Amino acid sequence: MTPTRAERRAARAQVAGYHEAELARLLAHVEAAITSMRRGEMDVFEVDDVVHHYERAKRELWKFCWLGHPEAAARGIAVLAADHREVDWWSEGSTARERAQGKAPKSESSAAGDPNDP
Image 1: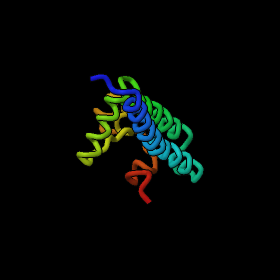
Image 2 (image 1 turned 90 degrees about the horizontal axis):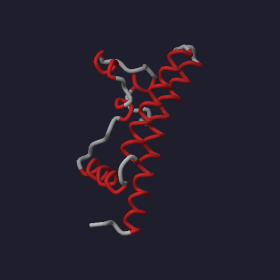
Image 3 (image 1 turned 120 degrees about the horizontal axis):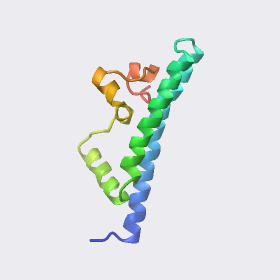
């Protein structure tokens, strides 16, 4: 069954809201890394690693949200919500080497857990 124009619009709005919220969570890692650098806890190269990791993570998020039909992504988001599950997009941005070694670029937020938790 082909979705109506209103259903497509609603799906795009839902996916856009999810995308925006998840991007903010990813950017919190970068913000924490920059803050750590300013405190002298990280050097510029470590922050650069975090920025590259962010780029990979946001690419994976974008693919989930926009590569196919927004209606499919909206259904996926609804299933995640119904099952009380979340995708850890930061981990999704890890390279195969990082996953094999159990590493990811350090950032204050990754050491402390969810960067959005108070």
